[in-house]
Image (cartoon, rainbow over all chains, first blue to last red):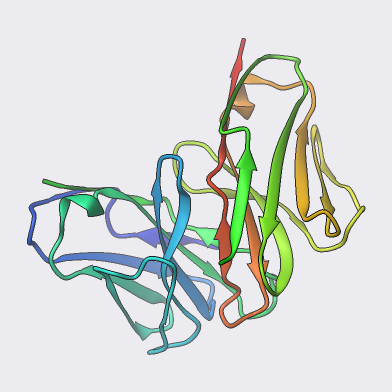
Length: 114
Length: 112
């Protein structure tokens, strides 16, 4: 079974703090994704990566950056957290080309920025 | 701009009822349409549809895609309380990374 893990289930941070959200997958997938999920808005793509050190902006990249130094790990960074970044963050991975878009999700990190 | 719209936003039914969830899309480079079920945490994959008119079934759940009218439906028959969840529709595109564009979801509550 594919396993996607995220470093924290719940996180509370203060405005202006630097926040790191880590995601690790154990299936050697090329593609990894970061989404945020807000009520009524569904999942919105922040960034994705299709290879080590490669990254592409999604729909809402402002205020975020990412890092993919190893194939299995994809990090989301909030350089200076703001209250409007309070949200549920979901990481996903998928094989390159094989799944025609099927993504496997981690359990999510619920971030509260005070 | 790519768009995926789900309706209704939320739905409350009683056990045993049949429900139909809708997903319409306007995207460039359509490749596939996927349905996910999300209970308390991670979305779990239900179906992937790539061709029109071919129904996919899994137990009481079924789904079909209409690529001409650009929509899909997810049917759940004889609903149970365990079907209570948010159902997400997503469209896969032909581009690098197998990117998905998600709809806003339909929240289904099944009452005993």
